[in-house]
Amino acid sequence: METVCFIHISDTHVGPTQAYGRDGHRSYPSVVKLVDILNTLPVTPDFVVHTGDVAADPDEAAYALAQDVFTRLKMPIYYVTGNHDRSQMIREFLPMGPLVPLVDDPDVLCYRFDVKGYRFLVLDGRAPDELDPHGLLSEAQLQAVQAEATPDGPPLAVFVHFPVWPLHAPWMDAHMLIINGARLHEALLPARARLRGVFHGHVHQSMQTTRDGITYTAVPSTYSQFTAWPTDWQAGHDTDYPPGFNVVQLLPEQTIVHQHVFTRP
Image (cartoon, rainbow, N blue to C red; front, side, top):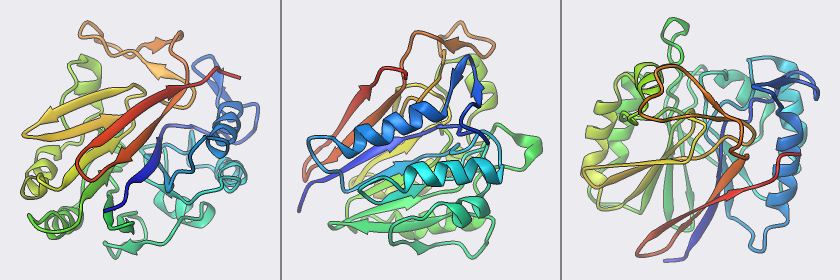
């Protein structure tokens, strides 16, 4: 089996204008620099996956700006719906590579795609507004996971915006998890021998959690990071932590996740 290399990015929070900023930083310049970096890496990734919060708010102008930047990529890109996103807007503004929808609902972005014999599963955990910023998976998606996560099959990786398990950061654990994340984990267990990992965003940090042999990996935001200490009872911002992305290599016998950071423009 061949090696697959993909880039994991998340939480770009593009605003409606290039001047938009939050948490003391402007998001647009970091996204532009990120795309330039990815287009000039010493190896060409097979694809990029954005695990949600493409936009700061579901604003057409923000998605148009994101479209202008991300269509400059020299490789395919796939998107996951974040709590700041709307699936219909992602579909309307952001082209993706070949994929197979798994849920027949225009408001849910759940699909699979295959690259070099590996299978990738994308889940839409955006919850109703009253539950935000928690995530919630629909019954139809959990059934799709059960259908895909069988003991036999190709190597598998899963992409979702929200963390599944507590991260020992009290404010994150109280507000940001997938409410029915334990059911997702249970649905994935039959496939753990071929499951290469679950990759998510939302926490604006590089964090890894392993449970029952399944590794859940978060990637830093491309421009602004949260703090995640066990003493953090309220949201905090790590002003010294630079923007970043992960290079993930799926080899026949192992998975390598290499974190990269870049200087804030």
